[in-house]
Length: 306
Picture (spheres, rainbow, N blue to C red):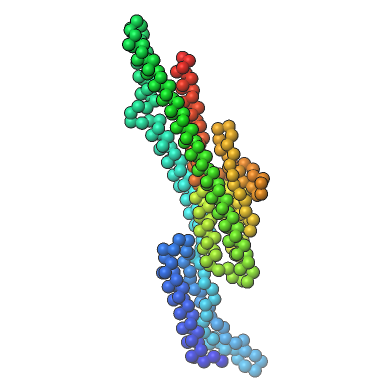
């Protein structure tokens, strides 16, 4: 039978460890990716007794059974989904703002140039024999042509920038998928010993959150905490990470659109599961700029022919 001093000793040791966990939480309050910990206390049961002796009902004290993380998979998924939607809108908005500043400047825009051109033609129609009005109309026409050409070059630059955003986003997401696969390997290895270090789970969640800023993803967890990540919000998209395996991403540009490709090794297939994140914002920006280019080309054709 344990003495009163042994029971008190177990209490002091357990609550000292609980205070250490609290101190760890306070020390890491501003640490990126850190999840709050909680010490779970458990009674140390007494002896079961035997044929000739009674069980020790008073118990043997207390001990720390587990250090538990404050983790909620549903809340984390909602947070990642919101972050993905925000990044998509933010990237698209920045590209749209640049496009609007180009198409709708305060002075000297394309609409103003077109108005000056038709005004100069009206002057020629009013005085056909006036050499000055003819000269002005020719110069204004040249200026309009230069405006169309300059606008086309700027739109091409905007599209190239959207391609670079897609390229860098795909490369960054591939790197994060590789990193998460490495973390999964460590989690699976440590899980064989019965308990996964909380620091590894924090790193896993931080990596997944960073991946969600680039593309919308769906995540499931194994019993020991290894994450399986797939593209898209439906959970049916191509897998980015499965245990220690990971996929790479690329892109293809064709028919006025960009498609992200995903696969392992050298086999990359196009996917339509880029629904959110910075990658989706870049893809939407590219498509919008392509539509604007087509409208500008059509406008130039109508002015030159009609």
